Image: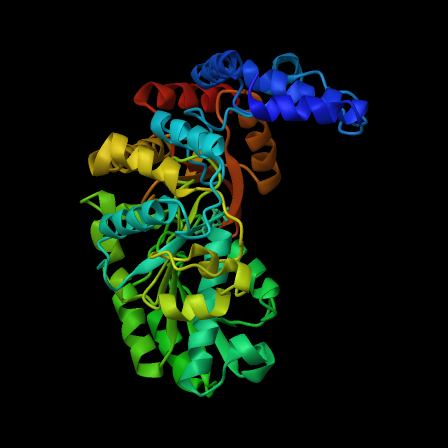
Length: 481
Ligand SMILES: Cc1ncc(COP(=O)(O)O)c(C=O)c1O
């Protein structure tokens, strides 16, 4: 028994109820090795089994969310049995190879290990005070810039909870920059001090619309730019006309590098030229498209990305680290830090390094850099390039099969990793078809509307998807047509 436990036992005599509970924790601490090995076995079984389990769970009514909190605990080993009985059988195999919904990355073995360690060591990744965690985050941000061919001294950034928050930071920093250009300090005086801020966007992701609400700009308060016909790509002539017609003192252009449906890439150089001419901040949402840089057949799609003022990306999508891990990169880290700084005497430090607390929404932060660092070390640039290339090939393969099928229609040739297709029937027929496909348990697709038609998205973003999975996916679809 160590001295902490000993002194706890002495205190225990005065408060028996709390003591019993605390004892369970000390018991668990003594058994921790066994508990972790057992947890590892359970996790291993789930991860390995994800190839064979139903891809989504369609009925989790067996789980009762209204059950009251137990008064007495049962210890971790016994609770692990409850996890196995009550929760694991009701999960989606979203880490598995045929979960093609949304843009859901899997988890590489190294990222899983890094994530577990991040929990075990439980650093509060606010900054450099007393821990190397901030330096690790700095290194990871540099590596991400390298991947995206962004000049490291010019770009800096922060890991966020996801692309939604990264888009939020783009708006916050962009708005502050716009204000400073005309002598308005939005950080100090609020958004109302620059009422004539105008945003321009052709195909903003749903998360950006949400962020417009959160920032107080307003969901509807942006100038919709036209797209090219049957595309989600910004129409440059229309953007130019709208920027030229604007007399707003602050302008932000939101561009896309990989839209969520068609995976369209904007002409970033043309947009950057317009932003220079009209004094606008350029934010690029590259939530998964940034990793096209890893595929030499597609890297050109990102030409001009280095001219963006801010960039959104995600590691929990195509870099296959566990949720959550978003990426925000900017050429104006000072502006971001001004908007997000958290100042109080107790937060002050003399330690050298980046204060990540001043670069985002949260003060207390998970050590998100660790899973990325471990996975990037373990597999290197080539490892991630392999994921991107094979997922793009898989999207193209599925598209070719759809094209050749007389009961299916391809909605767009995939540019990247998403195949959009539908059945030849009505929208209602196709809604029912999607339900039947997902009910097979072999594959999971999510819905979309494209070119006015209801369709399905198959988003390939998992390192585990292989050619034999494509065979299973095609057979599953064929069986319910
Ligand atoms: C282009 C784009 N931007 C933003 C997001 C939002 O990402 P997150 O769910 O990580 O916040 C997504 C999610 O699919 C996306 O595809």
